[in-house]
Amino acid sequence: MKYLTIGHASYDITFTTESYPVENTKVRVKKYIDCGGGPASTAGYLLGLWGADSSFQGVVGNDYYGQKFKQELIRAGVDTTYLELVPNYNTMLSFIIANTTKASRTILTSQDDNVVRCSMENNNKYDVILVDGEEEEMSKKVLLNNKDAIKIIDAGSFKPSTVALCPLVDYLVCSKNFALDYTKLEYDGSIESLIKIHNKLTADFKNIIVITLEDKGCFTKINNEYKLIPSIKVKAVDTTGAGDIFHGAFTYFISNNYDLETTCRLANITGALSTLKVGGRFSIPKLSAVLERSEEVDII
Image 1 (cartoon, rainbow, N blue to C red):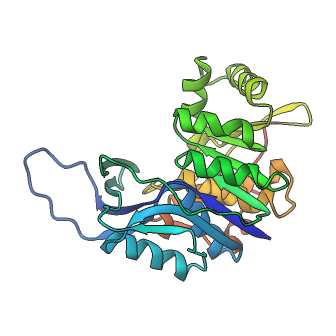
Image 2: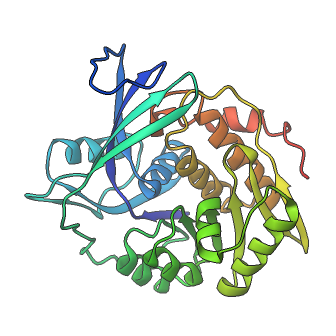
Image 3: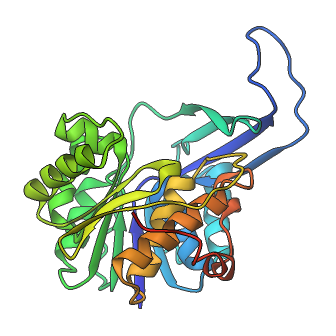
């Protein structure tokens, strides 16, 4: 089974601290962790680690961080044929302050004013495709060229490019923020409000909707029954990349003949376990560790 993830590519540098720094002071940190980032690329990285035939399509600069980004994917077994390293272009950098006491994070992002988009034509056939809304035109071409594939979107933030891709996929897996920004409906923590939001998304996009709710799990509809699928309880230290890792796991399980309920439960567990370590994709748990925890979730 051939997988393709398309979208955002960046490089993350994470500094850990036990409290947020005070302005105009110097803080000495014990360590930092640096690794590639971005929703689609992190999902592709997880797929490679878990033994899938995974490819990533996106853009970085032909610079120090772009080269590190590429080598990281290669070490995880991800095909980088369609990763473009653009000369005289700076790889997007994210500087992350991770407060391990509160499991909170503050992110500073540096990006060139003129963003370069994918230009390398990809006419290959894939069995599974995950897009994150960052590469709208290339994602459209690939999705339309692979109508029989399992197609998923990681709709993390509300952007016109993301909305444009939503009708082209089978599974719209969106954040609570995307759902609220798009529907303009209120969420008061109740199942009833989630149902209204879910129904609006389903009516507009005509696909399977999963709404992620961070540490509360995710919400979907299965066989005409609405289900809140909780996550496991963990003592989180860093939530960086947890959502991206959730989507990678969701893609893996739904494409390996797990039903939707089990897929959501296992993706929740994967995301939760990733918060036990600092540093985005380097915190991805082993597949065996996820499966060992698979019976710890009660469906509401």
